[in-house]
Image (tube, rainbow, N blue to C red; front, side):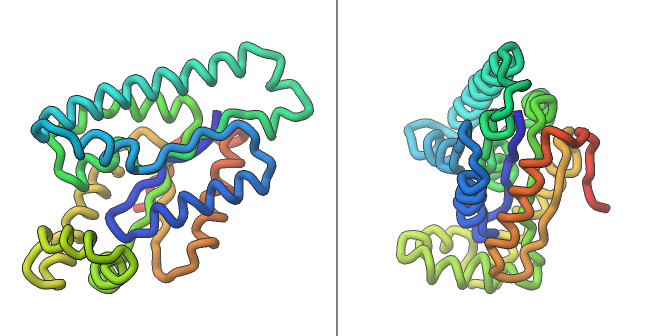
Length: 227
């Protein structure tokens, strides 16, 4: 298997890059793609009745089930004759997963870091790569607060109000969330690439991520966290 987990804070461009990665994979004739948006983790499990503890437990259970499914898919592929087939590059199972457990530190859900390490080791063993979209802190107010308010509309504007009484305070809230995420990332067993989002060149970011995914089957899984 090959693929990526795409992570980042609100407004980092995850959804835009996620959608363009899928388009690039289709253009590359990848025919066995598993795609899960961020909503499959956070929205599905937190927009329901229950406490944050309940939601976290549901997320952890779901991640365990997802990992098992991916492992079974990978096992079946390698147990078949497909890896030696001339169409193996097109048929190799490819996963594009948005956020997964890397939403937990962003949303401050009550899960210990140790609870997720086995899950991430399993993803690393499958050949997945962690790709983090990191927004320079000097850009966070413009990109993650002001710009996303404009593009996401009234409901997002109301959600933003929970981050603070002014855009400066809201930007500080996002900065702290990104720092928590990067601290989590620094301990991950997944091989990692951090892409600094310094502009709106979304297709370039997506093309870089796609290259990492397609090279996944021929690269080692050594950690590559930047200093």
